[in-house]
Image (cartoon, rainbow, N blue to C red; front, side, top):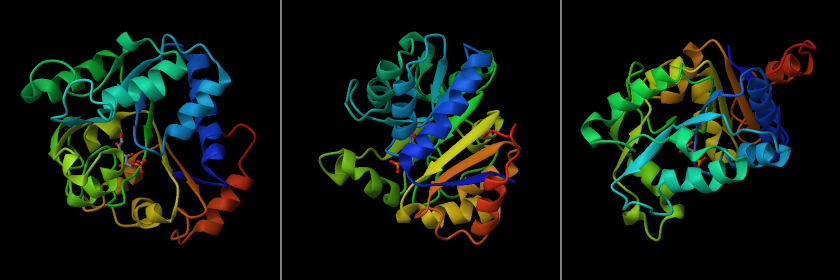
Length: 256
Ligand code: F6R
Protein backbone atom coordinates (compact mmCIF):
# COMPACT_ATOMS: atom_id res chain seq x y z
CA UNK A 1 0.00 0.00 0.00
CA UNK A 2 1.05 3.52 -0.54
CA UNK A 3 1.90 5.55 2.52
CA UNK A 4 -0.69 8.30 2.77
CA UNK A 5 0.39 11.35 4.75
CA UNK A 6 -2.16 14.04 5.50
CA UNK A 7 -0.39 17.33 6.04
CA UNK A 8 -1.59 20.74 7.23
CA UNK A 9 -0.63 22.55 4.03
CA UNK A 10 1.52 22.61 0.91
CA UNK A 11 4.55 23.89 2.80
CA UNK A 12 4.48 20.91 5.17
CA UNK A 13 4.29 18.54 2.20
CA UNK A 14 7.14 20.39 0.54
CA UNK A 15 9.30 19.95 3.65
CA UNK A 16 8.64 16.20 3.82
CA UNK A 17 9.39 15.67 0.14
CA UNK A 18 12.48 17.89 0.28
CA UNK A 19 13.81 15.91 3.26
CA UNK A 20 13.31 12.65 1.34
CA UNK A 21 15.22 14.10 -1.62
CA UNK A 22 18.05 15.35 0.58
CA UNK A 23 18.33 11.96 2.29
CA UNK A 24 18.60 10.36 -1.16
CA UNK A 25 21.20 12.86 -2.37
CA UNK A 26 23.26 12.36 0.81
CA UNK A 27 23.52 8.67 -0.14
CA UNK A 28 23.85 9.31 -3.86
CA UNK A 29 25.02 12.80 -4.88
CA UNK A 30 24.24 12.12 -8.55
CA UNK A 31 20.72 10.84 -7.80
CA UNK A 32 18.21 10.89 -10.64
CA UNK A 33 15.03 12.87 -9.98
CA UNK A 34 11.81 12.75 -11.99
CA UNK A 35 10.56 16.32 -12.15
CA UNK A 36 6.89 17.26 -12.32
CA UNK A 37 5.76 20.75 -13.31
CA UNK A 38 2.47 22.56 -12.67
CA UNK A 39 1.45 24.23 -9.40
CA UNK A 40 1.64 21.22 -7.08
CA UNK A 41 5.38 20.51 -6.87
CA UNK A 42 6.38 24.15 -6.37
CA UNK A 43 6.28 23.66 -2.59
CA UNK A 44 8.85 20.88 -2.92
CA UNK A 45 11.20 22.96 -5.05
CA UNK A 46 10.87 25.95 -2.72
CA UNK A 47 11.59 23.85 0.36
CA UNK A 48 14.59 22.26 -1.36
CA UNK A 49 15.96 25.60 -2.49
CA UNK A 50 15.66 26.97 1.06
CA UNK A 51 17.81 24.12 2.38
CA UNK A 52 20.71 25.27 0.23
CA UNK A 53 22.19 21.80 -0.33
CA UNK A 54 24.69 21.12 -3.09
CA UNK A 55 22.59 19.53 -5.84
CA UNK A 56 25.02 20.24 -8.66
CA UNK A 57 25.49 16.56 -9.53
CA UNK A 58 21.81 15.66 -9.40
CA UNK A 59 20.36 14.52 -12.71
CA UNK A 60 16.79 15.25 -13.74
CA UNK A 61 14.18 14.00 -16.18
CA UNK A 62 11.04 16.07 -16.59
CA UNK A 63 7.80 14.12 -16.66
CA UNK A 64 6.33 15.77 -19.69
CA UNK A 65 6.35 18.64 -22.15
CA UNK A 66 3.87 20.37 -24.41
CA UNK A 67 4.22 19.77 -28.13
CA UNK A 68 4.00 22.69 -30.52
CA UNK A 69 4.99 25.68 -28.41
CA UNK A 70 7.64 27.91 -29.98
CA UNK A 71 11.13 27.34 -28.54
CA UNK A 72 11.64 29.41 -25.40
CA UNK A 73 7.90 29.87 -24.75
CA UNK A 74 7.66 30.80 -21.05
CA UNK A 75 5.05 28.08 -20.39
CA UNK A 76 6.99 25.31 -22.10
CA UNK A 77 7.98 22.84 -19.41
CA UNK A 78 11.64 23.32 -20.38
CA UNK A 79 11.27 27.00 -19.45
CA UNK A 80 9.30 26.17 -16.28
CA UNK A 81 11.88 23.58 -15.17
CA UNK A 82 14.70 26.07 -15.80
CA UNK A 83 12.91 28.84 -13.84
CA UNK A 84 11.42 26.83 -10.97
CA UNK A 85 13.89 23.99 -10.55
CA UNK A 86 17.28 24.26 -12.27
CA UNK A 87 18.07 27.86 -11.30
CA UNK A 88 16.76 27.98 -7.70
CA UNK A 89 18.18 24.56 -6.83
CA UNK A 90 21.53 25.06 -8.54
CA UNK A 91 21.19 22.02 -10.80
CA UNK A 92 23.52 21.67 -13.77
CA UNK A 93 21.31 22.43 -16.83
CA UNK A 94 23.31 19.92 -18.88
CA UNK A 95 22.11 17.15 -16.54
CA UNK A 96 18.39 17.90 -16.90
CA UNK A 97 16.38 16.51 -19.78
CA UNK A 98 12.85 17.24 -20.93
CA UNK A 99 10.97 14.81 -23.21
CA UNK A 100 11.19 15.81 -26.85
CA UNK A 101 14.29 17.96 -26.31
CA UNK A 102 16.43 16.07 -28.85
CA UNK A 103 15.83 14.82 -32.35
CA UNK A 104 12.57 14.39 -34.20
CA UNK A 105 9.36 13.93 -32.23
CA UNK A 106 8.76 10.52 -33.81
CA UNK A 107 11.80 9.04 -32.06
CA UNK A 108 11.93 11.31 -29.02
CA UNK A 109 10.04 8.88 -26.79
CA UNK A 110 12.40 5.97 -27.43
CA UNK A 111 15.39 8.32 -27.06
CA UNK A 112 14.11 9.53 -23.68
CA UNK A 113 13.55 6.00 -22.42
CA UNK A 114 17.09 5.09 -23.46
CA UNK A 115 18.49 8.12 -21.65
CA UNK A 116 16.63 7.20 -18.44
CA UNK A 117 17.97 3.64 -18.61
CA UNK A 118 21.51 4.91 -19.31
CA UNK A 119 21.23 7.15 -16.24
CA UNK A 120 20.48 4.03 -14.18
CA UNK A 121 16.76 4.77 -13.81
CA UNK A 122 14.86 7.41 -11.86
CA UNK A 123 15.44 7.22 -8.10
CA UNK A 124 12.61 9.49 -6.98
CA UNK A 125 9.74 10.64 -9.15
CA UNK A 126 7.76 13.69 -8.04
CA UNK A 127 4.15 13.54 -9.26
CA UNK A 128 1.08 15.74 -9.24
CA UNK A 129 -2.34 14.52 -10.37
CA UNK A 130 -4.83 16.06 -12.78
CA UNK A 131 -8.48 16.57 -11.89
CA UNK A 132 -9.20 13.89 -14.51
CA UNK A 133 -6.84 11.50 -12.73
CA UNK A 134 -3.82 11.79 -15.03
CA UNK A 135 -0.27 11.41 -13.76
CA UNK A 136 2.34 12.81 -16.07
CA UNK A 137 0.09 13.58 -19.02
CA UNK A 138 -1.21 10.01 -19.13
CA UNK A 139 -4.85 10.78 -19.68
CA UNK A 140 -7.62 8.29 -18.81
CA UNK A 141 -7.30 5.20 -20.98
CA UNK A 142 -3.49 5.26 -21.02
CA UNK A 143 -1.90 1.83 -20.91
CA UNK A 144 -0.23 0.83 -17.66
CA UNK A 145 2.63 -0.45 -19.84
CA UNK A 146 3.04 2.81 -21.77
CA UNK A 147 6.45 4.43 -22.19
CA UNK A 148 7.36 8.00 -23.18
CA UNK A 149 5.27 9.03 -26.17
CA UNK A 150 3.11 11.74 -27.70
CA UNK A 151 -0.41 12.04 -26.29
CA UNK A 152 -3.46 14.21 -26.95
CA UNK A 153 -4.56 16.24 -23.93
CA UNK A 154 -8.17 15.96 -22.76
CA UNK A 155 -10.46 18.98 -22.91
CA UNK A 156 -10.47 18.93 -19.08
CA UNK A 157 -6.67 19.17 -18.86
CA UNK A 158 -6.52 21.96 -21.41
CA UNK A 159 -9.17 23.84 -19.44
CA UNK A 160 -7.31 23.25 -16.16
CA UNK A 161 -4.03 24.49 -17.66
CA UNK A 162 -5.56 27.49 -19.44
CA UNK A 163 -4.62 29.56 -16.36
CA UNK A 164 -1.01 29.53 -17.56
CA UNK A 165 -1.89 30.87 -21.03
CA UNK A 166 -3.57 33.97 -22.47
CA UNK A 167 -6.56 31.96 -23.64
CA UNK A 168 -7.74 28.32 -23.43
CA UNK A 169 -7.21 27.98 -27.18
CA UNK A 170 -3.50 28.65 -26.65
CA UNK A 171 -3.05 25.48 -24.58
CA UNK A 172 -1.38 22.94 -26.87
CA UNK A 173 -3.43 19.97 -28.03
CA UNK A 174 -0.52 17.54 -27.77
CA UNK A 175 2.15 16.67 -25.26
CA UNK A 176 4.98 14.20 -24.88
CA UNK A 177 4.94 12.39 -21.56
CA UNK A 178 6.65 9.63 -19.64
CA UNK A 179 4.30 6.66 -19.72
CA UNK A 180 2.69 4.88 -16.80
CA UNK A 181 5.23 2.10 -17.41
CA UNK A 182 8.06 4.63 -17.21
CA UNK A 183 6.68 6.01 -13.96
CA UNK A 184 6.33 2.49 -12.54
CA UNK A 185 10.05 1.91 -13.05
CA UNK A 186 11.07 4.80 -10.80
CA UNK A 187 12.24 3.52 -7.40
CA UNK A 188 10.15 5.86 -5.26
CA UNK A 189 7.02 7.78 -6.24
CA UNK A 190 6.08 10.90 -4.30
CA UNK A 191 2.59 12.02 -5.31
CA UNK A 192 1.34 15.34 -3.98
CA UNK A 193 -2.12 16.90 -4.19
CA UNK A 194 -3.73 19.91 -2.60
CA UNK A 195 -7.26 21.29 -2.56
CA UNK A 196 -10.80 20.03 -2.92
CA UNK A 197 -10.47 19.89 -6.70
CA UNK A 198 -8.07 16.95 -6.38
CA UNK A 199 -10.12 14.97 -3.81
CA UNK A 200 -11.93 12.74 -6.30
CA UNK A 201 -8.77 12.00 -8.28
CA UNK A 202 -6.85 11.12 -5.09
CA UNK A 203 -9.63 8.84 -3.82
CA UNK A 204 -9.72 7.06 -7.19
CA UNK A 205 -5.92 6.74 -7.32
CA UNK A 206 -5.48 5.49 -3.77
CA UNK A 207 -8.65 3.52 -3.05
CA UNK A 208 -10.41 3.00 -6.38
CA UNK A 209 -10.12 0.02 -8.68
CA UNK A 210 -6.88 -0.34 -10.63
CA UNK A 211 -8.01 0.78 -14.04
CA UNK A 212 -6.65 2.65 -17.03
CA UNK A 213 -9.71 4.89 -16.68
CA UNK A 214 -8.01 6.24 -13.57
CA UNK A 215 -4.32 6.51 -14.49
CA UNK A 216 -3.32 7.51 -10.96
CA UNK A 217 -4.46 4.08 -9.76
CA UNK A 218 -1.23 2.75 -11.31
CA UNK A 219 0.45 3.79 -8.05
CA UNK A 220 -1.26 0.84 -6.36
CA UNK A 221 1.03 -1.45 -8.36
CA UNK A 222 4.20 0.24 -7.08
CA UNK A 223 6.08 -0.97 -4.00
CA UNK A 224 7.23 2.41 -2.71
CA UNK A 225 4.79 5.28 -2.97
CA UNK A 226 4.32 8.28 -0.69
CA UNK A 227 1.12 10.29 -1.15
CA UNK A 228 1.24 13.72 0.48
CA UNK A 229 -2.14 15.46 0.63
CA UNK A 230 -3.75 18.29 2.52
CA UNK A 231 -7.09 17.86 4.34
CA UNK A 232 -9.10 19.04 1.33
CA UNK A 233 -7.44 16.63 -1.11
CA UNK A 234 -7.86 13.83 1.47
CA UNK A 235 -11.54 14.62 2.04
CA UNK A 236 -12.90 11.78 -0.11
CA UNK A 237 -10.60 9.03 1.21
CA UNK A 238 -12.59 6.35 3.05
CA UNK A 239 -9.73 5.08 5.22
CA UNK A 240 -8.45 8.44 6.33
CA UNK A 241 -8.47 7.53 10.04
CA UNK A 242 -6.21 4.58 9.38
CA UNK A 243 -3.77 6.71 7.34
CA UNK A 244 -3.51 9.22 10.18
CA UNK A 245 -3.07 6.41 12.72
CA UNK A 246 -0.35 4.70 10.66
CA UNK A 247 1.60 7.94 10.15
CA UNK A 248 1.28 8.95 13.83
CA UNK A 249 2.58 5.52 14.84
CA UNK A 250 5.38 5.18 12.31
CA UNK A 251 8.50 3.62 13.71
CA UNK A 252 11.50 5.88 14.34
CA UNK A 253 13.38 4.56 11.31
CA UNK A 254 10.41 4.87 8.97
CA UNK A 255 10.71 7.80 6.57
CA UNK A 256 8.88 8.47 3.33
C1 F6R B 1 3.03 18.07 -14.76
C2 F6R B 1 2.23 16.86 -14.83
C3 F6R B 1 0.78 16.86 -14.50
C4 F6R B 1 0.43 17.73 -13.30
C5 F6R B 1 -1.07 17.75 -13.07
C6 F6R B 1 -1.46 18.62 -11.91
O1 F6R B 1 4.36 17.79 -15.09
O2 F6R B 1 2.75 15.86 -15.17
O3 F6R B 1 0.38 15.53 -14.22
O4 F6R B 1 1.10 17.25 -12.18
O5 F6R B 1 -1.70 18.19 -14.23
O6 F6R B 1 -1.15 19.95 -12.22
P1 F6R B 1 -1.17 21.08 -11.11
O7 F6R B 1 -0.10 20.73 -10.15
O8 F6R B 1 -0.86 22.34 -11.83
O9 F6R B 1 -2.52 21.03 -10.49
